[in-house]
Image (cartoon, rainbow, N blue to C red; front, side):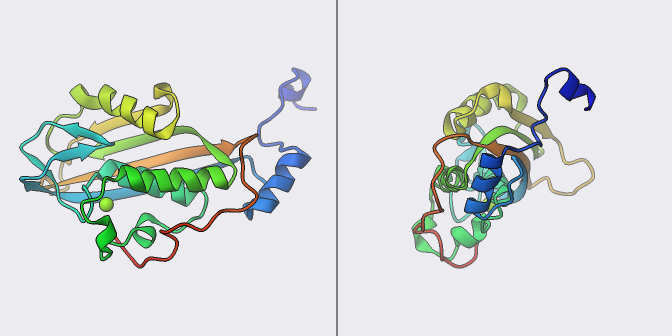
Length: 206
Ligand code: MG
């Protein structure tokens, strides 16, 4: 018996029989937590609104892309998809598909969240880092955090928004986003098996 067991604390990694059975049904191993990582970059362009984390940020330039260029939502979406070993955002939402032209990236995030739920998991927390020369993110970080909290259905305290300038990277004309998510097994509301979606087959993307 270890120290945690002596104090009556059950280690989260010790999944119950039910949890292990559920994991097998989902095609995912029975481990109760999963980690996911995603990153993306987009080039700045004049005449385009700047959207980061589903939030419009006042700035002279926005991010160019087939969709709305929301580099942070794209990184988070890929982190969620990666955590459940699903196809990546470029596979699900091809930039060569006219359906996604100018699309609000909230749609991509929603599909990733749907898949996470159907796989039987929920978000424990998300952390992210934006790398861009301008604008300063600090004054907007709380607004982005609140918006992501609303979109992802997790508390603002579970969402990390950090930003750095690209010292020595030579990427002043681009915005880069990295995101990691931690998922934990949901105890309720899971589906028996993932449903097919309109985005299941389309070609490659951004
Ligand atoms: Mg992208």
